[in-house]
Image 1 (spheres, rainbow, N blue to C red):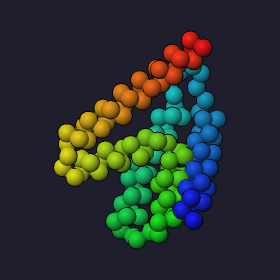
Image 2 (cartoon, rainbow, N blue to C red):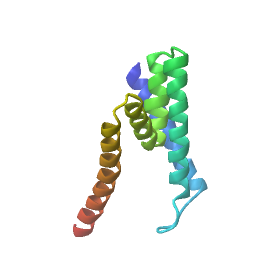
Image 3 (tube, rainbow, N blue to C red):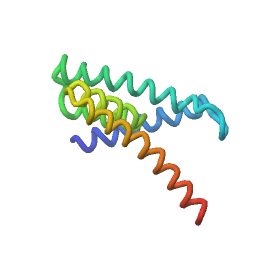
Image 4 (spheres, helix red, strand yellow):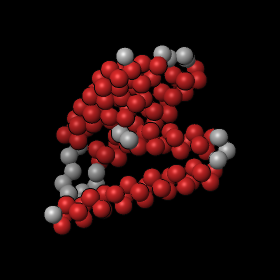
Length: 122
């Protein structure tokens, strides 16, 4: 059941992200309006969903997986990153949260650069 919830939610989130990209297309070098919009919205929504589903209401595991891992995971990966960093900060682990944030941001930038470099060489 949990795998189905993740699959259906991911499909929905991916379609929503695709539609945002079609709604706000950006040419190479333009400001990526769709990407920043889905990342900011996804971060806001995952924070709200976490509080609502985990702290205020006892949402079932399949529903949590559908919305948080599925829909929002398919919509944007930044939402999960923002929530995890926030939770680490909330646990009083400031150094770990800063390290996680820096490793994620710089790691993703480095991975994107490496992928582009490799594809250029091939």
